[in-house]
Each structure stands twice: as structure tokens, then as C-alpha cells.
Image (cartoon, rainbow, N blue to C red):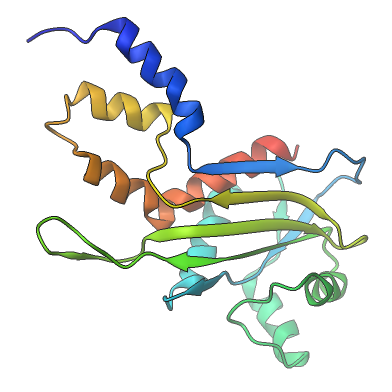
Length: 200
């Protein structure tokens, strides 16, 4: 079997930077350190798994960051007391109000649209994210510390490009990589890594 051309491999790795569908932007203003956060249920159009998606994100954020994360039942208790929906609170004013009651430095909110996808062999694939936007909102000021966004399409990370090339597209097709990169666990993993890298 022919070995993979190293120049081609380097080219694909370089191009992957511009092929990523998930990006993160952070404020350039001086902000107080974040130690404790609350993650609200994500609001997903065309899907009923926003809560599971946010749970997946919390699981990975605990792995990558040093933040203390408020237990979800405490959040639900406050939402019930304030007569607010559990399905996803996204406006800044309400989020910061909840944050002050919980005693956290920041609230993480997210909303997006699920992808209704049918594979080439006519199988419906569930739990895929088409677009998604997540914000880390500072409770004290109500300003956005960081925003992460997933655009439609395949998130071609260096790892996925290497996986696709080393498999010579025979083991993993472009569709396999697309499905993998849009799965909510993969999106949660990537966003939690980016947030942990950008907010020390």
C-alpha cells in the first residue's frame, strides 16, 4: 500500500483551521475571574433533547475546566420558584437574575437547531446539531465573556482530517465524519474544550 504523501497531509492539516465549523470569541475587556458557573438547559429547535445536550456539555466541562458547576436540581428549584421554564432561559436579564440568586459568577446559555438527517442508506440519524450558539454571561455585569458558535457542516478538526486520510476514505466516509462531528456529544466536547482554553 502506498504511503500517504506528507505534503498532502500537512496541507490538509493547515486547511483544517479554516474548515472548522465551531469557533469561539472572547471579550477583550478586563473581567473578574470566573470560579463558579451554572449551565441552563439548552434550547434546541426541532428537538426535545436540549436538557441531555446540556448534561453532556456539563460532563465535559467538568473534565476540561477548573470551574465549580452548580448542581442542576438547584437550578431547577430556582426556576420553579421564579415560575420560569426549564426548557431554556436565554435572555440576559433573566439569566443574570438567576445567576445572582444561585451565587455564581457566570451563567452558560445555549440555543440552536437540530438537524433532521437521513443517511445515504435511508436511515434517520438522531441527536445531530445543525447550528448552535453558546454564551458565557457574567452575572455581575450582564456582559458576554465568551461566545462559541457551531455553523452548519462538517467540523474538520486536524484529528478528523487525519482519521479520514489515514483510512483512505475507505474506513470512514465523508458522511461518517459529518455525522460524528454533528453529534451533540461531539459538539459538547469541542465547545467545552474551547471554553476551557479561552477562560483560565
